[in-house]
Image 1 (cartoon, rainbow, N blue to C red):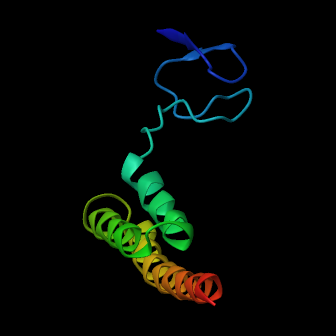
Image 2 (spheres, rainbow, N blue to C red; image 1 turned 135 degrees about the horizontal axis):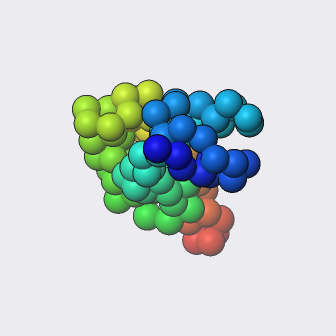
Length: 101
């Protein structure tokens, strides 16, 4: 049985793993984990917005990703959430001190 390559659009055997013409993979890639994106979004938000809330959100997403989906992303998210959360709180204190004085 034949199918079309998703990259070069030539007819290839449906059993092959790589296209013999362009070399692209014929297996469907699984969709990305939305919790990975959400974790990094929380980390960035913890620098500018309510740091304790978004830091905890980044840590929770990191723990989920570490145990269920992507261990490397999970560890990175936990570490970055802690670092960026603390930096966000320090920046908040500096800005508050400047505004008060």
